[in-house]
Length: 243
Image (cartoon, rainbow, N blue to C red):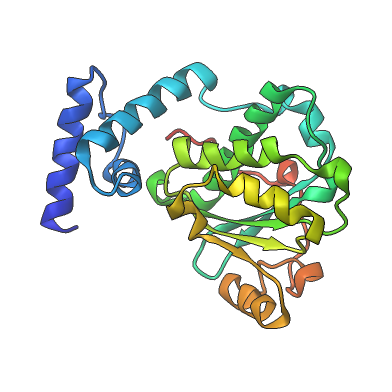
């Protein structure tokens, strides 16, 4: 680790203490995610970290979201979690045609946390949690107007930005229909520049080849040109995530 990073970490820990909170339970990789998300500004990173601590203790008081808290969302069997990509990140597949705007938005928010926690935990396996990133494949094939949920998409990206900084490695969007482009433009207003740079809309054969090559065909599901079998997230075993 560079001297400047060590200095920033020390400064951030002091700033968090000044705000009345402790960083004792958290290793350098976890704090570094917040520093990177705030362009190494120690004060801003400390504030973001404290907001995350407060949110986590109120929204996820047990430390995790149990499956019994999100039954309606799990029932749709619309989220899949694949094995590691070439660089060791788990791959989450979202089948948008199986999603409908939720009546219970609180349960949907809990579902987003359940998904992200589980995906990140599945990548840890003995390594420090702070390193865990994930790749997301958003598949819009066969969607109709009934599946359109701009609010749900915005919630997902906002949670990633505010509460899961530097967890998203890449997001690939497949089969975006023409009618959805205007919805996507509206959603993009809520996505930060740093997040937008990680989003790739796959539109042609060359881009599709690059998408398979970057992730690795062992982790890409067969229906997208890879070799993996789709596995629903509830059928994946992962250790609980605690940071």
